[in-house]
Length: 126
Image (cartoon, rainbow, N blue to C red; front, top):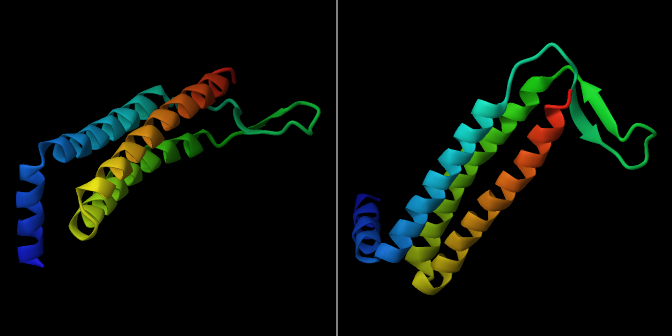
């Protein structure tokens, strides 16, 4: 186990592009978590928690504002899992498959930024 981690560390240090991409995933995920945690405000007012195109009001409200904090947990899980799986792919399948998978992590967090921005914008209307 220790030798595997040492080998992985040496291999990642030798491959600066993959290492910088993994650091970018982690930093961008942490920026996502900070953005969400700074923009979620506790309130006694009902917050929009559900959208349906079938209902008459389309936006449904609930008093549970703290469900928005689950986006912070998503950002942390995104960082940990994409780094761990990318390292595992790098060890077993090589650099050619690890780089696109790491870029997928970047795309996921960028899409999460876009979705969370819209969700927080709707939640702020409450």
